[in-house]
Length: 119
Image (cartoon, rainbow, N blue to C red; front, side, top):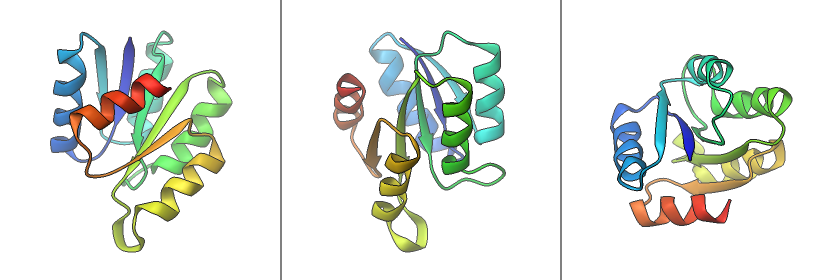
């Protein structure tokens, strides 16, 4: 499976990348929504996007809306630690805006893989 990971935290991206490549997935990574959308334009065969919700430049909720308009069938897993207000509010909003599933940070590799399987 080809998966795009969008997160401004390099450590989180590395953890996700390591977890997914061990399962033989092809992983692309981006530090914000703008970079992620560019990668989606270049690699139309990506089947899943994992996106953080709180990022500089283009945040995750806006990114989800744009992805849905460009590629309505792509699967989206929204992740968030929530910042100052906690993750639950952001994750509920991500569901409303088109995420197929959500996952609260911090999460384990098993939780991530289970969430992907459930997509």
